[in-house]
Picture 1 (tube, rainbow, N blue to C red):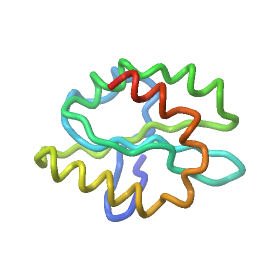
Picture 2: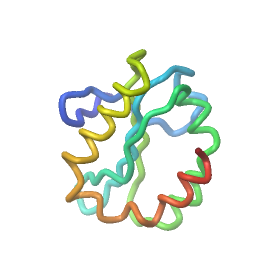
Picture 3: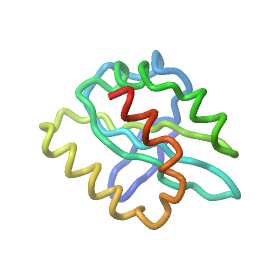
Amino acid sequence: MSIYLGLFEFEGPFVEPDDMKDEAGVYAILHFVDNEYKLLRCGERDSLRKWASRVKFDDIKHRLPGKMLLTVYYTNFPKEARKSIAKAITEEFRHEARVSYLIKPMLQAAS
């Protein structure tokens, strides 16, 4: 399935990190509740699978009603370009990211 965020086509949603490629790219964590998607967090990593394997998604899911979706945009763009993509998506969807304060500490711990 494809999920479009801004101009970018993200793959997913992924349930298990093992289902992801061990490649660089941009990730987006979406929250689906009340028939709406909200952006929780968007960032970049050199190894999306390695990063996702360290995040405790079950802990995050217990804190939020609804469904959480992990999507990725694989790209071999340099780190700064990936950061720019993540920043652009975050800014575009900033007004919708109302619940990100709940999961930010858990995501930072996995970084």
